Image 1: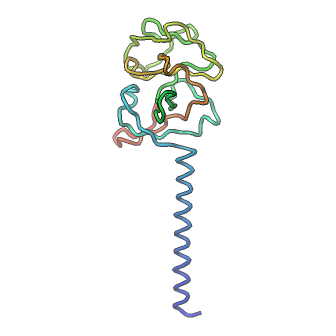
Image 2: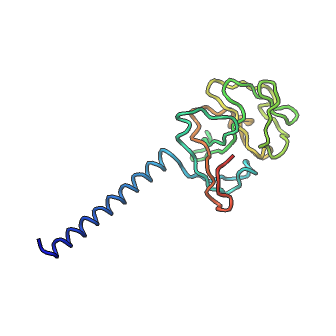
Image 3: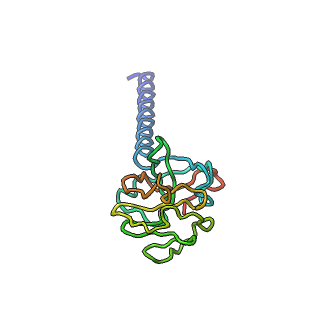
Length: 183
């Protein structure tokens, strides 16, 4: 074999190797974006101070396939009356619990909920002015900015079914100054 032919085969082998790696990376990115994590943007101030308008987030779409959502998780779910509109809210009530809001205080099964996520005292309890009993697969969600949030207190949102939950807001990636996990 001549020196020129060896060099040509080496270049072809290297080019095929690069094509293989690029294809592999594209496949991995596709799988991650479609089945593991999804990027979304927080719109509005309903989750202030935890999230701000324009924050870019990564949503974990896998965890809830293996575990149940927990109280205080920040979740993403579609708004049922407007296509391509997603809400980001915090889980307050879990399946089987009763939720009531009275005089600005959240009660779970008749006991005051100890939490520090609410930005200010709740002025409008909405549907939760009467006890709400959650079904086996239902969750009660609130925005952290309780007086500027459309959430489970509103008939247009109501209780969120387990199968409606897209995933858990896991990581803020933008702005870089606020990069980190979402609590």
